[in-house]
Length: 634
Ligand SMILES: *Cc1c(COP(=O)(O)O)cnc(C)c1O
Image 1 (tube, rainbow, N blue to C red):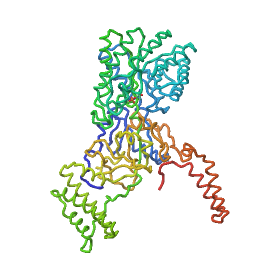
Image 2: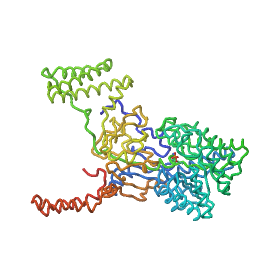
Image 3: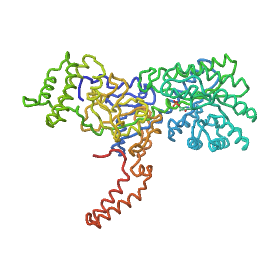
Image 4: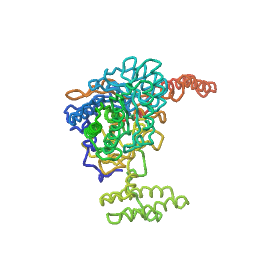
C-alpha cells in the first residue's frame, strides 16, 4: 500500500524513547551505535553492514554483536546499586551475577566475567551443561558461581569439584531432597560447600512471568520446607554452610510496585533466618529488571515503568528498612539480572528480498463500460463517488458487492476477467475508504483491519523462529527500523514476513512509535538493498531460537566501537550451512551423496543421462551442502 497519509514525520522510529542512549540517527540518515549516552563517538551501522556484505561476503540475516554494550549495561547496573547503597547508607555490597540462560554464548559470559571483574561479577547456572561451561571460565576470586535449577547427584558433584578447585560455588537448594544429597556428598568428600535456599514468595511479579512467583510457583521451598532444611543443616552440623537466600519473582517485571512488596517479604525471610544464628551473608534477589522495548515507560508487557536507579533504590531501601526494624545486619545483595544486561548488545539485521503480491497492490484504474455486469458497474460507481461524508456506507456497499461478485463467479455468471476487475475495484475502494477514515481520525476496527490488509507484505530474509522467537511465542515486541534512508519519509505501510513456510512467520505487531501498531511504515523499494534492524535480541532470542524449516544460525560479526568513532570488525563467523542443518536432523551428508550418485548411475544405465551429465549433477549436489541456509543470490 502506498499512501502518503501515513507518512510519518518522525524518521527515527521513536529511537529516543527506547534506544537507552545507545542508538541514534546521523546526518546521512543512517542508524548509529555508541557505548555511552550522548557520546559523539559513534559507529555507523549502515557502513558496518555494507562492509560485511560486500567485502566479507556475509549476507543477511546477520547478527551484529557489540560486547561493549554488555560492559556499559553492567556498569550502569552496578553504579545504580552503588549509588543506592551510598544514598541510604547501606552497609552491604552489590554483587552482580550473570544468569547463563539469558545468553550462554562464551563471548557474552566471558565479557561479563572479565570486564566485570572489578565489580566481582559472577555467573549463575541452572543445568549441568551451564555449570560445566561456567567451570571452564576465569572469574574474579571474590565472585560467586551460583547453581540454581533442579539437581541430580552429577550436578552436585560438579558443584563440589568447582568448590575444590577454588571457586566460590553456591549450591542453591530448590527441593529438600537436594539438600539431603548435598549433605551426603559433603560428608563423603569432607567439602563444606556454600549453600543457598530458594524460597517461594507469596508476592508475585507482574507481566508475562507472573507465575514465576507466588505460592504455586514451580521453584522454591515453602516455609515448612525451609524449616525442614534448617533442621537438616543443624543435624549435619553444617549451619555455617548456609550463606545465601534466593528469590526470583519472574522476568520483565513491568511494575515497580511489585518490587517493593517482594523485597519486604524476602528481607523478612532473610532476617528471621539470620536471627536463628545461620550466617547468611547474601540475599540473592534474582532477575526481573525489565527492558523498555517499546519506549513507553509504562507497565505494559513490553515496557517497564521504572528506571534502573529507581529499581535499585527500592531494593536497597526496602531491605535496609526491614533489617533495621529486625535489628539484623544487612546482607550483601546479589542480582541475577540477565535480560537488562544483554538485550541491547545484539542487533539483528535482515534485508527485504521482495514484496509479496497481494490483491492490494497498486493497480491501474479499471475501465468499465455498459457491457460489464451490473455488480462491476456498481463497484465502479462506488469507487468514483466515495468521499469524506459517505466513506463508511460506501465501504459497506463495496463489501457486499465483493461477496456478490464471488457468488456470481462461482455460479458461472461472470467471467474471470470480470472477477479480476472486481477485485481491483474493491481494493481501490478500500484504499480510498482507509484514506477518508484516516482523515476523519476514525480508528474503528473495520478500518484498522482494512489498513492491515492493504499493507504491503515485505519478504524479509530471516526466520522469525530462529532469530526473534519471542515475537512468535509470546507476542514480545521488538523495535524494528531501517538502518538507512532515515532522512527520507517512509511512504509504504507494511508488514514483514519471513522466509519460512509457516504463516506464523510474520511480524505484524510493532511498537507504537507512530499510531500504527499493526503495520510498519517503511520506504518504497528501489534497486538498492534495503536493510532493517531488529533491536534488543541479545537476551533469550539466540538460545530459544529453533531450526524450523532447517534454517540455521545467521552469519555473525563481533564488533568494537572505536574511541573517537568508527568501528573495528573483531571477528566474523559464517552461519550454518545446509550440511550442518542436515546433520542436526539426523542425515549423513556422505550417505546422501552416495544415494544421489546411485540414482544418477541408474539414469546412465537407462540411457537418460550421459556419464558426463551425471557427474555434473552429482558434483553440483555435493557443492550445495556448503550453502548458507537463507536466501543468497537471485
Ligand atoms: C531467568 C532467571 C534470571 C534472569 O532473569 P532476567 O529477567 O533475565 O533478569 C535470574 N534468576 C533466575 C533464577 C532465573 O530463572
